[in-house]
Length: 386
Image 1 (cartoon, rainbow, N blue to C red):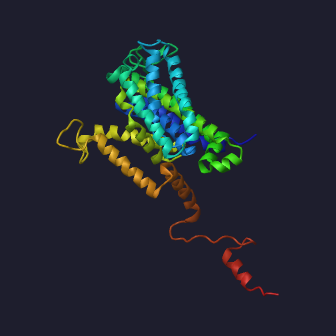
Image 2: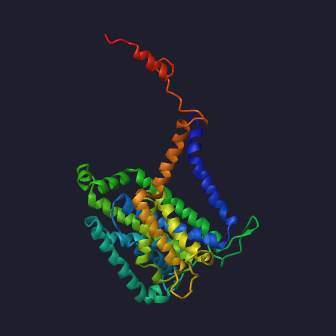
Image 3: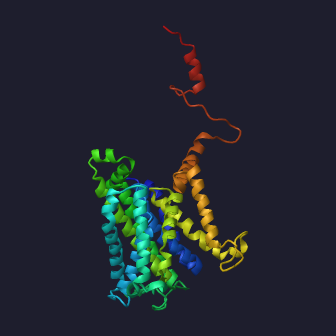
């Protein structure tokens, strides 16, 4: 029977993190829970873009389009006007709809790469924004549409449902959606890591490094590129559904080119090709403007929202900050926050074995006969060459 301790040691930090995240709604107010919800939704979309750009090496500027497909697809499928489907069914269909939109574009993604694919996907953002503004019967036009609450088994993820109190803490919309976001993010985390560690991840990495070598090894380059684009679109659609539920109202102006650039910043800051890095970058880019908005009156050179006089608002200031973060990452840590954390952990693990107690130098390595290295070196020096 194998010893379970190594497995517990490996899974211990993950379990502790999960328990901590599950306990947060009992202690945090709605503002912090809302930041967490937006961060989880952004992390789901960033993981999808990381698979496409970091692992497959495909540049995409159209991620906001697929987020809009997921968000508006859920709103139309579950709302009125619309088919009025059960919200759970509408959410699944909205994710599949985003994947279908990615599948329609996948022939282009399978044959075009680099900056050319970036320009092609850029057209999706402008086309999608135009459709959102003009298709009033589906999208509500400029003013957008309210989002129907999600219901699962009679449980409503909104304050309009039955009053719920857990351990003396009233659970409103943010508390309920928090656990939904955790569940969706957990599914995203484990499925993405499974893809990266399995054969698809190795094939996509081979395509990114050398298309010729990948083709020689039997990898169908165009097929894997197209599949990566479809999977990334489905992750974006899931993120769009969670964003819509968190915002409770969707408007076209949110799904603009700036949102696509934000997602590129997330995966660059966090680290390309890393699920944990994409998550860290998503939290950083999402939480920074919200925190600066709340504490704008306490920050130097930052004015409160709506202030005049040409002052810098929290949104602009946050974009300057994570723009500077991108420059610093590219200069000093090209593998992002994930690579920086990995190197830091490696240094901390090596330090106890190299440094001894204060005032003592490094201990010499033992010789072949169990003596120290100095005596072993001395003994070899006395040997005569035959």
